[in-house]
Image 1 (tube, helix red, strand yellow):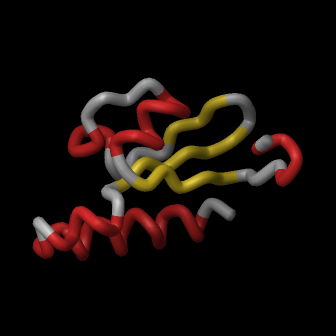
Image 2 (image 1 turned 135 degrees about the vertical axis):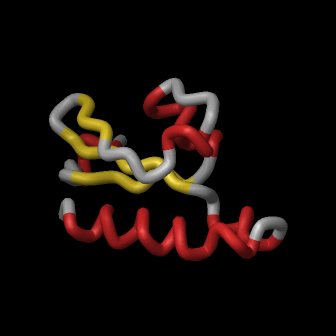
Length: 72
């Protein structure tokens, strides 16, 4: 399905998306890293809902989203 849109970069929000696309189990370790696979850039980060439980992570999420925009 992604091939139809053919994005150059994809933000993976949370552990489930990161595991599905990159087989990453720890979003804490992988967040913010630029990972290239199949001609695309993936940037895993926290799911925005995680801020409900850990509001201190907001700056990290914003930083990761900025990194994603820079790679578009």
